Amino acid sequence: MCGIWALFGVTDEGVLHPAVGECFKVARRGPDATRIETVKDLPHSVLAFHRLEINDSAGGMQPMRLKRYPHITLICNGEIYNAFTLRDAHGFEFESRCDVEVIVHLYEKFGAEETARMLDGIFAFALVDTKRRLLHLGRDVFGVLPMFTFSSEGVLGLCSEVKGLQSAAINSKDADISPFPPGHVRTYELGMQGQTSLVSERRFVSIGGSDPVREKGMTLSSDVQANVRKLLKEAVRKRLMTERPIGCLLSGGLDSSLVAALVVESIRETRNGFVHKGCPIQTFCIGMEGSPDVEHARMVAQHLNTEHHEISFTPEEGFQAIRDVIYTLETYDITTIRASVGMYLVAKYVKENTDTAILFSGEGADELCQGYIYFHKAPTPEEADKESRLRLEELYLYDNLRADRSVAAHGLEVRVPFLDKFFTSYYLSLSPEERQPREGIEKYLLRKSFSDRGILPDAVLWRPKEAFSDGVSSKKRPWFEHLQDMIKSKISDSMLSEAGEQFKGVVPATKEAYYYRQVFEELYPGRHSLIPRYWMPKWCDATDPSARVLLHYK
Image 1 (tube, rainbow, N blue to C red):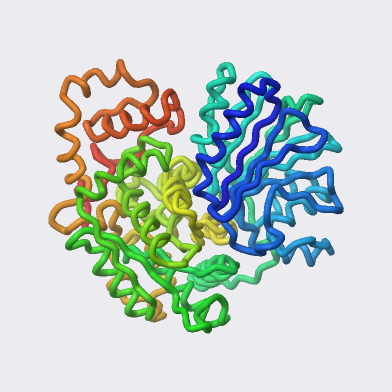
Image 2 (cartoon, rainbow, N blue to C red; image 1 turned 120 degrees about the vertical axis):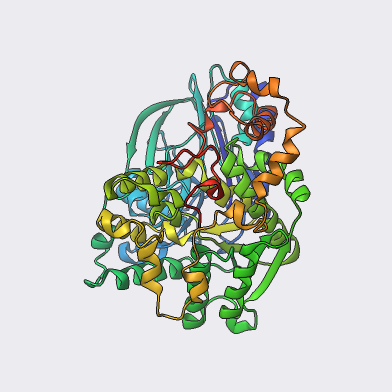
């Protein structure tokens, strides 16, 4: 995960210089190199890039300008899995081995919107075209990679994270920092002093609204389960594109275990990566004493013969990490914070104790495959389908924060095969009945597609859903109860009763929620609009997002 930052149209040097310094607040995303540049023929504007070196150590630095197109400057946080396929198909002459270079070539030939549509990967980019006096911004369909913007009176700022824009936004009248919408391309006209004016904003792809499988001409069979296996395996295989060591986050649940199994299988088949050099794939699990996640992850690691790491933490250590997690995530959502503590701590361990730079994870499966336990309560298959699509649309506000931010905070990169555009488009094209829980089992189709294959132990393949923040806990007492006990003494009843007067936006209803919001406001005052609501299960009377409070929890 790299970090991008840019500011356009700031004529006041007293504002510009301090604002540029803020770009280093996201330097953790790119620990290998930093470059800050102005753009020729574009005064009062600055671009910055923090690089995490994944491919092409010599030619992959940004801002990127090609000799053939000197009027184009690109900054991009991305991994484009079909970059070299597109290069060969269109006869592009690359000047580097960096995958994001394809964006420049595609833009010059097809324009910004078509470029974004053709990319297979995850990305957040800003492309400056001084010849046409245009600025184009684009973000991948699920918003796996982050980008935030603010705009005020011709001044435009963008950054991978909110924290890099705080100073600049404060000095711009009525500037509201907001997430750039996934699946969109936005175009601005650039004035002679670098000021911006919005020209257009278009959604180049919608979730489940296209059929890239058919567009690519992929051959699928009439066997749905065979197609699920084929597309998910291909989603994993293409994400092995790296010159750095690979590891897998392994909770012992279905999603991360299935991804880890496919990573190991794909590498052993292709002899890609580091296995053939005597370095087995590493897997990482975290949990408290008595955690069911640790128990099942160990079972998977033994089955796959990986180099397995188990990281232990106490409730007190988890609580002490809360402030850092909120600073990292830039949210006050309850379940996102709870679930991210373990991921934040395990990524910290990976950075400090190994040379692994790429971590595979199972994010997106619950939203796509209806894995949350409350999907058992959906009144109809159509309602379950509607909820699944909504959760996918809002991933960038919740689970993607955990996936990207918890890992990027330690200079690592996460890869999420379940959010592959070919796999998701096919899965969503199936009937609502095929995708809903069956026989009291969530993600039934996904599990059945890999049953009788020996890829995972049955105890893991058919293991009931366990929320990440619960699975790291002991079986006797969930993690969130430890948190709530430690927070009780910090928030009084009167503070909670006055929460509606103190906080704008989403008002906390519990002491735990109040505490998170209090820390968030200290770090990001006035940024309450970053989430529209708390993440909560549907079709039930739950007062807490934990799966363990639901009556039908297994």
